Image (tube, rainbow, N blue to C red; front, side, top):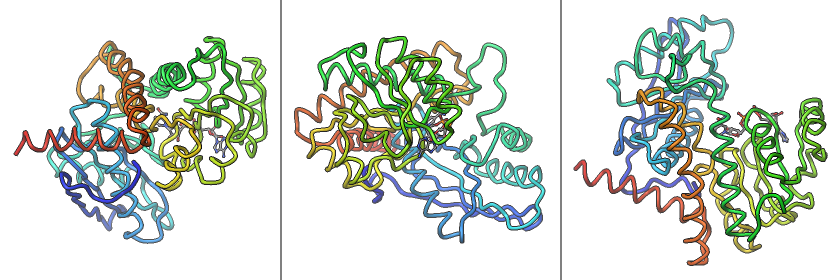
Length: 350
Ligand code: NAD
């Protein structure tokens, strides 16, 4: 999302979470239920006060609405943010109390893991409500680690974006990958298989060295990866990789990666446009994970996950084509598309 201002067809609702016995203290933010239940993970993190937690929840909930809408999922957008308690606390009791709060919303909100929460936490939530995903997958059903699906969607997006923006196939290109964790490493393997040259960096030097040896990639310092000589830059670490400074120094002509919230500030989208660097919008590119996680809740199998993930690349291509035709940032075009999908569903429901 380029900016965080509320749009007319969506109204943010916040539900306070408070349970003194377990130490539960947080908020569920529901941005839109026009397309279906508000879906988004549960973040468990230290926040100075409930206002800071609420602000983060609202920003993340809006992001989930846009991501789910663009992934053509029958889901709205929401997010839970729980404040990490000071001192000792009973984790099982806290997540059970959270599960009770989710259940009280009667399906308006579906939760899952996010930063700071685990499968074990969601298993506790599931003792109180069925409106939870990210559990251990049942036989033949979708679920489990979403990272390979995320990486597949990023790979397809990159291949199609490169053909459009760079008029080249991956075997003729160099890709700089920032962060070779679950998604980044899987992406690198697919890129190596496709014949791309790889430059990689990770703060975990040992992990990076092992992957570089495995794939014959060049390893560089984390401080250099965004400005290295390459055709494509793939942010696959944390958010905020694209700043005014990193964009000014970038040699790559295309940005396409897995990280959430790649634009440090909304105006970075304009800086990319001004420099002629094509930006594949992060939340469209990295939707494979939410597609996999939500399939578990929607009762879908692996074949439907594959079908949904296969639509990511062509969707990114359509956004880039429209943006190029209109001389606008793909980030803005994607936001408008998402808003139109949500507004259309809200109108139908009215
Ligand atoms: P991960 O924790 O497995 O990997 C992140 C990697 O980035 C780690 O190896 C870490 O050491 C490295 N890293 C951190 N800071 C760095 C820096 N400044 N420079 C270089 N490397 C750095 O996480 P992941 O699951 O691979 O996710 C990667 C990104 O993709 C995150 O932003 C995540 O929110 C996003 N994402 C992931 C999924 C998924 O399915 N896992 C889905 C959608 C979006």
